[in-house]
Image (cartoon, rainbow, N blue to C red; front, side, top):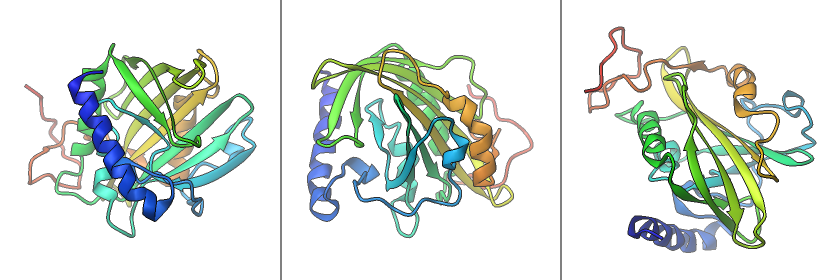
Length: 248
């Protein structure tokens, strides 16, 4: 295990220990918990996901990859109440679907979070990465080769990874997309994360991209084409720019 990943794991465990007292089950900055929350009205419904039989909402990210700061980019701007990241978990016969909603980002760099996600995914492409599954109790983890999804529009970033579980050697395939969005007529930047986890070495059905249009409709959100090109400095604005910025 690399020094950087060892440090990441150490920090995760330290933070998890602090949260266990308050939450009973959680870790990192994502405050993943085993305590259900009300299902947001902005989330996908059971009827939106073919084959889904149950749904439940939880605070934080339920499937976490250690690819750099990729998950912190989703949650770091939402740590203060009343806003926090919520993940809705949908159970299927041979897979699980997750929708993570971070729709009320308040930061001087509103689009910086998504730009960081895209950069981290590109940097991790082709490397071995560890994944933690907060949905399972006790906490489980696996490892596999991280593959960035090619040819994604600027509003999306994604990856696929087939992990081998540490506990029993079984395999799970994770397919995930991050969508940069705005709500409230373009005034509020946000991120929607759609994840599928199959119980095999093949991706699950439906794929995250197949759920995106419905997810946008439910959240009353619009894809933000300026999410990467918008100025990421202190003067970053919540409103879309008209002139794209070219990255050197």
